Length: 212
Image (cartoon, rainbow, N blue to C red; front, side, top):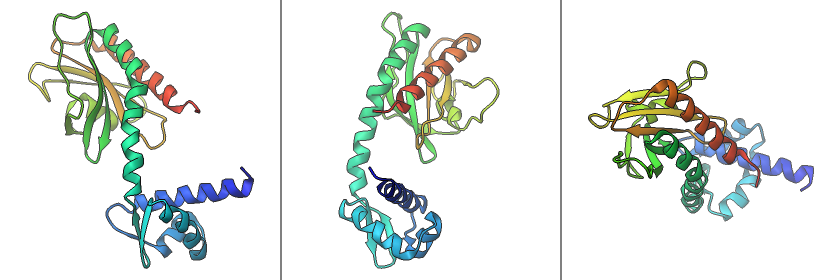
């Protein structure tokens, strides 16, 4: 790809992000021009291929995300789940607790991948698709954890009576707000489980950041 082509691609992606950042409101051409530091004419040119692929929808001076993004988004979770499974398997077997990967969906955390240990007598049955507020449970709280400190969050009985959880944020992956953790019906020794969870979260981040 030529340098000019690379710059065009970068601006196109920046434009798509600017449309997304508008949230539920449609962005205007002028607003988008300011957001990406380009002229209105340049924005109109960049919108053409994005519109043709259904990634944006333009109604006069208003621009919204297009339904073509749904097709792309539908492929994200399966690929994320596949990448996370080996890391979750290793963690579940090491700790002896159900391991899970959760991602932020608005103000909620959603479990997108779950692996149960094979050698325990009993364990938590944590379902893929389970949602709960980011403010409750280790998985949600870990996503809002600021850098520094121990690097993990613990919870007890917040989502299910008698269940304990430890989770850590998955950091450094652009566009991904997620956490990786374990949940158990028995008390978890955070001094042991915490570092294991943090290490697993870091390994997953490394996997997701690897170039194709």
